Image (cartoon, rainbow over all chains, first blue to last red; front, side, top):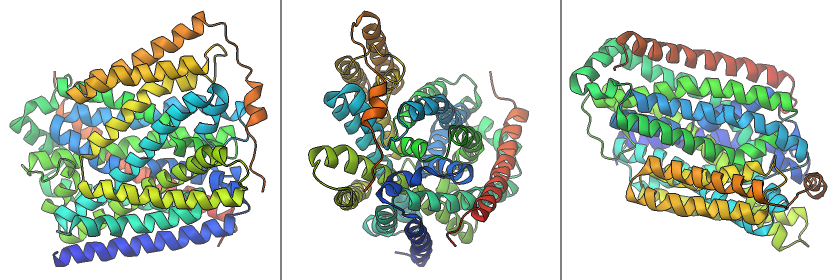
Length: 476
Length: 40
């Protein structure tokens, strides 16, 4: 372990302690009842809600994966990734009003699926959702850990613990309010901490035009608009991220937490526009790693390696603050999203006699176990992009059946389950075989086709009033 | 067909400017929100 590595650890611990202390204090002040833990008291305003959507998007996935793809496939992949996150939020916006109007006292995506479609589809979607949250947390830990490992020369086990343990503490004890509060802080700090390294590198290299010239010199394919790997990646990442975000418990939680429909709509559109430039700048740093001829010890490390190799050490330390904050924000949201699903969708239905204080206790225990599991996966450090895409594939198969249920009375639980499982079964072999784009397109098309076929031929009719009747506020 | 140099430069510089705008925006909202809150 180098001296620089020790500095990184200390900085990371200080950052985590600060946000843990403030986040936990804030959540204690705000905790009116157990429901507040899950949905923030349904009173979150535009400012914090926008901040939380922005900070949520700026996790390790954003900081590491766009750079990885720009390094591997050039500018079209870079733009595709930026569009993916932006479009995901925009696509989600029109559904939020429907969700809030049908289920005004909702908490999770799981309870909607259970009431609308029954137990079978509920377990399928729950599995998809929990796998996704787990992978999200693990991938964020990997991002921070590989930065410490390859730049600070810190053993993986220590990196994972230094990042993971404070996150588990603040998210477990603060719930959604803690995650949202620290999102507010992080979303203020992340833009300048991304911008400063970008400006300094640009000054050193002679501007964006100089980078363009260098790319054209080394591999002009990277600047080709219709470069096949870039286009394929753009298509798949747009489907992948949109599907995943539409089913994301952390986002559904925020839909329920907002003060009003107008707040949600403005927050999502604002944050959709804001994440685009952030992704471009993060990806640009990966492109710079390519032009500098840097060899990557891990596929996901292009962006921080560019900062480390080209700029003074203090800039890397600042960048590591973004990485820890970004990982903290997204991972904190994942834990908070997991704990509400775990408590309300798994434990409460299995133990209906348990009061909400008991459920809360179980939620916290579940979060700790979830966190420990993710830290174990992070220790082995698979590619962040590969992990995220595998979770996204499951979401791509489930998203249309789930959302059609909000609009069509004719789709039954059995039809939705068959559509989802068929989508997964058709897409997974292609994904494993390496045809990543085709796997996503196939999963989406198969599940969509079956869902719409069922809605046309079925005699089944669902009463939407059932949703509001059965899904009620937690009161004790 | 390639992205032009001018397009690429605009993309990067506008994104960097956008990031600065995002920062200002978040600070403004944070201040506005804090005034309405009582947790301090």
